[in-house]
Image (cartoon, rainbow, N blue to C red; front, top):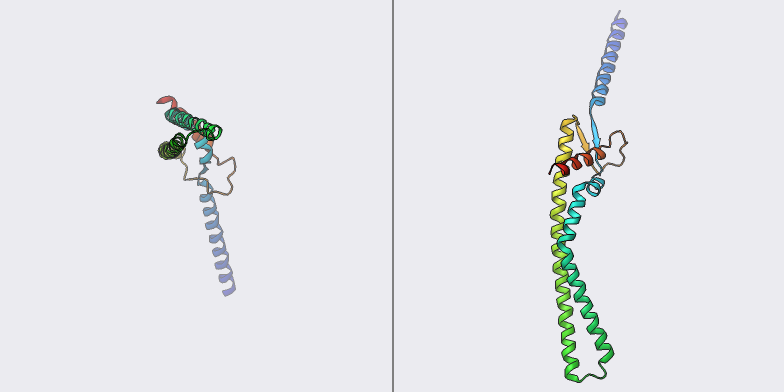
Length: 177
């Protein structure tokens, strides 16, 4: 009789354990997970292209100015190389000083240009990242996702990849604004 009770308890414990794992497994299957390839979103979102065009329009005149400055420097260097043997000492030294001044000006202008471009690029990137984040959160809430994973994921199947949905959502935002 003791063996029957012990066997019954073991069977009951086994059944309870089994049902616990089944319910846990069922709950795990109910979790809705999504994956977003943020690099692709940042590349393909219409806002990214708009930011690139905006930056180019903003910085193209300054870039052209630097190119013109470099051409003028090259012209003066060529003139110095070609005519320095026949120039007077005074004229040669004056042109050498002018060359040094031009090189410094170009270097300073180029550094300012690069610094300003990087600052503006970072501003635009931060704005875009904020819009992407808002689109992800909005989609997650609307479609009842429990977890949205990003680029640190080693593998994500197409079934959980919601990158296209995010890009479409960002495209709709573009048309609304």
